[in-house]
Length: 333
Image (cartoon, rainbow, N blue to C red; front, top):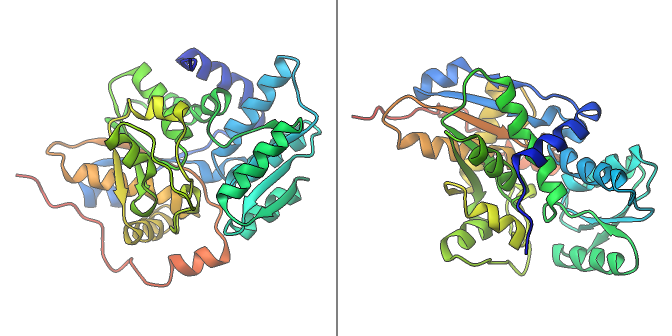
């Protein structure tokens, strides 16, 4: 039986990790608001330690283990990028040298960042192989820090929305996250439902739509190989039973095309003047889809999950200029 993570768990996680992390800003573009006819607020986790929200979950898990007297000597993890950096950074604060398994198609810049924090990074042929080798390391005595499938990880990632709600004057009508393995969406759903009065949605690449398929079918769908999408943070094989428990309570997942991901990555960079990785753009693409159906002015909180981009991704993002098409919504009758 899976434990139910509560709002009190999230508040405890926030108190635990707050001294070590940045309180990331909430930005707004009045020009975008005018174009859309709605208010959009952006929680900018690209300004977080390691440049992504993943630092919250990894640090919360290690500090919680330390409180329990179970701080490990050996740590293993698997990741397509940002979680690798997060585990490496969190371990460096506690004097642990982790071993992290990454698929061959993971971002080189994210792998290098993890190594710079002292991690041993081992490249596996595929995402499935990286997960298998991390599991073997766990069997050999290492503590596995998963990217999303753990209560302490989800609790830490949930602090993104908790912190956001503390920093804005009124609750938004809807919150939007990206979804890969589902940790951030799970955490946001926990907070959103506990606080009440807002909907929680996610955006997922249509080419890597395992969470959306799982939600539709009522059972977990897993890819055999990592999906091909520019949103490298969403190249997961599948969600877990733990995250599915919370994802089933969210208000929906929008399946986003590669063109939409590229379009909104460019526009987020342009209007906010921040480095926005493609996985972050899934949130805004989902928000735009939702706002298209709204007949009254709404306030949307869009969580931008990170800003770590490789040279290859930059080339993909800017291969075509999408800034010639202004994002506007058609007025509703």
